[in-house]
Length: 253
Image 1 (tube, one colour):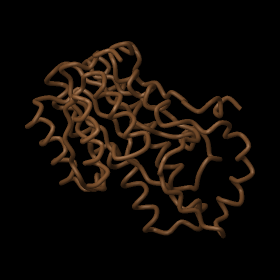
Image 2 (spheres, rainbow, N blue to C red):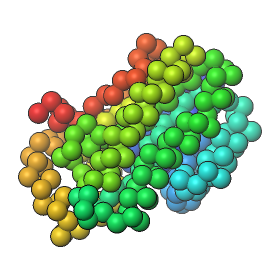
Image 3 (cartoon, rainbow, N blue to C red):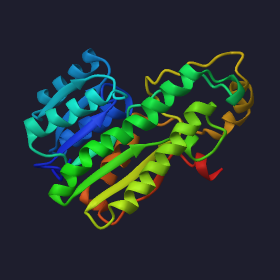
Image 4 (cartoon, helix red, strand yellow):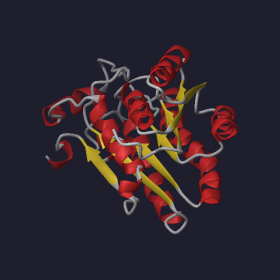
C-alpha cells in the first residue's frame, strides 16, 4: 500500500470495529498517524495495538461523541500529540428501532439524532479551524442508503442520515475555496457489528421488510474503507460535496 498519508494525521470515529476499524487500519498502512475514537475502551485499544504492531502510530480516545467535552478532548489530544488534523472520518453511529414517526419515543429520537448527526457537526466545527490554519483538510462523513431513500430504516435513523448529507453539502460549499473538502459515503448492507435493535411490533419493520430484496450483496468493511480512504486522499483533490453510494448498486434499483 502506498504511503500517501505520510506526515498526516487522521481522526476516525467509531474506529473500534467494522468500517471504522478497517478505515483506521488502511489509513495507518498508508502512513497516517491515527486517532482511534470509540465508545468502548477495549476495542479502541485493540485497534491501536494492531496499528502499532504493524509499525504505525496511533492513540485512542474513548468517550461518547454526543458530548461536547469528549469532542473537545478528541481534538485537543490529536493536536497536542500530533500537531495537526488533516483528515476527519465521521463514522460513529447507531441504529434506531425501525419505528415510524407515530411510534418514535423522545428518548430514541434524541439519542439517534445526537449521535448520528449532532456529533459529526460538533467534530466538524472543532476540526475546521485547524484545517483552515493549515489551508487544507479532508472530511468524510458516513451516511447510509437511509440518507438517500425512505425505505432503508426507521424514521429517526433515516432523518439523521439525511441530515448528514445536508451537513456534507453545506460544509463543502462553505469551505470550497479554503482547501477543505467534504464528502460522504453511503453504505448499503455491510457486515459489521452495528447493533440493529429492531422491534417486532414496529410499523417501520413491517413496511421496510418488503424492500429488503433490493439490498443485494452484503459488503465487507474493507470495501467501504477503501472508498473512504480514497475520498480522504489527494487522489480525490477535485471531489467535494459528493455523496458516494458504496452499496453494490442498491441505490440504482
